[in-house]
Image 1 (cartoon, one colour):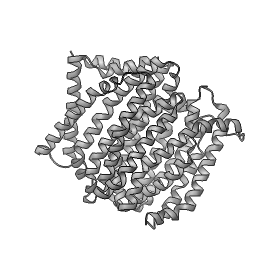
Image 2 (image 1 turned 180 degrees about the vertical axis):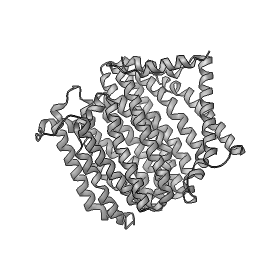
Image 3 (image 1 turned 120 degrees about the horizontal axis):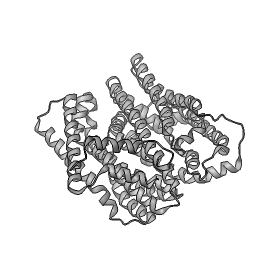
Image 4 (image 1 turned 45 degrees about the vertical axis):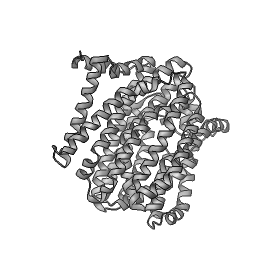
Length: 503
């Protein structure tokens, strides 16, 4: 018999109640981070849909190439200071904050200066004359970020995600307001540029409003070496991620041009919104939580595996749903110039599902002090990705680029499962068992939604998309309800067990 609504409500309240234990802070932190990322993503996607009515794929491509050029410098100068502070065993890291601020300022200044000088080189490489000025103005963003209050790292270290919510949301609000206002004045790429710079400025200002730390002038060389020693693996991982996260955009820009970059990037954002945000929530919340369990292998193993299943319950149906409604969604909300991204959107949704499931791996290895494991796995994915990327893009355009991502993940994920299983001393059979129910329910949901869409019983336009989404949600919930009635498997119980493991 399925639990009554009142019972579910009481259990939900119990699961979400705040407290002083690691368990309570982690669960409450997860709720806050879900709110942060959910609001952030909905606002940004809503803005992108509006801007797509005003701007061409070429304008989106210019901003994409500008961010790509900046990312090369940001990843190349990634010190990993925040990760080192969060992973530090001591709860009190005040003695490191002055040094962390100076490292942040140095990094921001180096990135901004290099971006200004190298902008013409990028513009020439991508054959986009307007790109030089775009990169130079975007370079203000890392400079402003480097000025932020390093004390804000406590929000993540201490799982104080209510304050992280305020910090992140301030930037999102600035981005949306400035970009929307700017596009109404002048419908060009500068609306997006202004929004991005405003986001960094707002977060830097708010970081000093909501955290009491005030900068000093001390710089501790020993502290800097300690932070950078941990950060060297984060740096290495960052270089690999640079290729994985931006290599596709670079190849699309070089082979197909700025307009194709705009199509590809919007398809990526739409398809990977759930994966990106789920990954961010998981990484932000589980890294400090796993760090506190690093000396208790049994609790760490059980908590990790249950976290994996809870994550699958959320991310898999959303990714499958995006693939199922891709055609109807694009035709309902975008103009004809955006229709070429539909096939890429479907393939990228598969990539999003694969990406979200392994989102727990990086935080786990960083938490137990083995970031090199994560770098090695990412390097494997990078090698496969680069081997497939050029021929696939040349053959099938941006859809081929998306295929390269899926192939690379299909090779990396099984290896990652083996490495995690050995690290946690967990039987490998537990991993597919953790995914079986949410995967089966999600695939059946996708099949039903596609069938309903194909037979033409729903209207076209936004109303039809809403109907398809409603059918998908209802089907997925009914399948989980049937599983609960027949086997007793309960997602809320999984959440409760994760919480208990953190107690």
